[in-house]
Length: 485
Image (tube, rainbow, N blue to C red; front, top):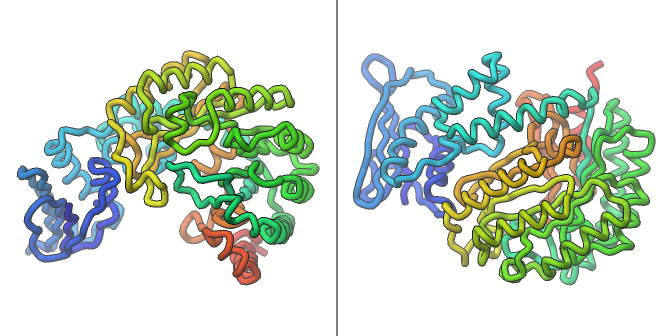
């Protein structure tokens, strides 16, 4: 399908909008004066004699088409032009596809954050919810879900320390790569030779970030070790460095390690996590159906996941998260229900329900069609009902491109067991200082509101350019974080 623009260059928003209806499809682009033949999504902006602009929209799918136009001021800001283009094309796409996405025209990853901003702008959550429904065409159910999460998050946001920051350490290694995974992760068997040098570099980067935290008068609020699969390598030294630099004497609200894959969890590495004060871990089955796990390339069984959860309990962990994915190959609505029911019977403190997202970096991207949206919607609806009935509350939410049924990922937690790091990070309400290959740093403030710094994605690039990267990082962070004299 062709995305056609003329008189403007707002192709990104048009592509994001079209992906709500045609996920995981590749598009071509045209900037010719006239819309191309065949299937296309077209937005043309032309000047009028009175100085205003005419925006004409055309959607052609399967031999049928819809069109419309509106008049706009000549000096319309780019963000409002994006909204006007979406408002013109969205109903055309709905009419021609017979689809009506539950999140309406919203294409961003943080709808709860957007609802918060609307509420702050209007002074009313009720008005913000009306805007969600009437302007952005979000369903009543999703509007209420966003509002419920907003209410749960507010005390967590209010409790954040002044000048608080989160620390994120990236461990981009896994025993093997799961077929749905699009993260930067490297097989330990293939890339294990890099690990000793990786230890040296993250030790130096932890020291650099620690010095900046001290120099800039920051308070470490949380530490989060993610990946990859952190427990696929020996974490003793990284935990020691993080503890000495950021945890000792600090009133951390959270210290999380994504233990993740059950096949990497042992009594010994759980004891190390306990030794260094880790307060929260993830044990991620993704499914409790063995055939689904095999199809996803997970080298463990459902019983392995349950056993490792019970081992973590025995070791003393009283804040455990479990992840599940709706829409995995070979899964059924009934099978997913059974997975959620089994998770509830194990009684973890939090359960995160993801929808399968097909990304270009994942093995599934080329070989797997998107799962049936009706089935995924049933799975997600059942999880929400079952988890709320069992005493869990949705507390954070985010969306991704190419998601099954255009839905969302939701973290559910028992009251008091919400992850402050997840809330602060996803709400863009706190500076996050990333360490390691693939880690992202985002600093609140600056000319653009949020400044984002990204390390090299791949460990070998990170190691090869380490000195250069750290010199630039120190200069950038001090320029953004140093208190004004």
